[in-house]
Image (tube, rainbow, N blue to C red; front, side, top):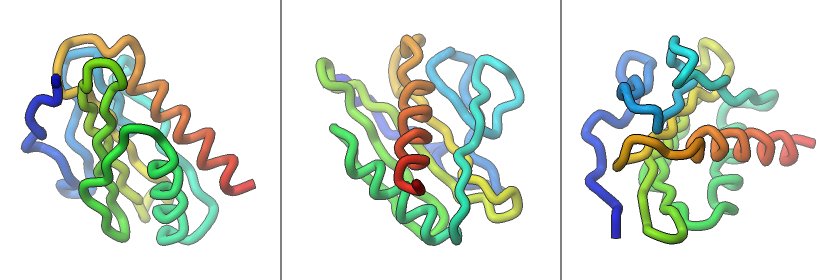
Length: 132
């Protein structure tokens, strides 16, 4: 119902995810400002195993759609249960930093009531559980 249009700025450019807009409905591990910053996801396996584990976690969550899946990048869409609002969530295995960079942003509206940050933290927790 409130899906909105897929943003044109998704993907990796020069090793970076798109910056967050000035609205409070986005988090990004490559952001410098505190309002949008979130820690990247960590992994202790080979990068290919890390992205495979991440994909398994994503597929276990409700109302998700994996749009792009490569050896180093996952782009997923998450839809809210009630109104169908779509959030764009990207993951980039950053081999230089040995982390998975993440960006989660709402397509519509201004505030997300912390949903994007909570989602990334849930994914982080599920990844840790899968490594144990």
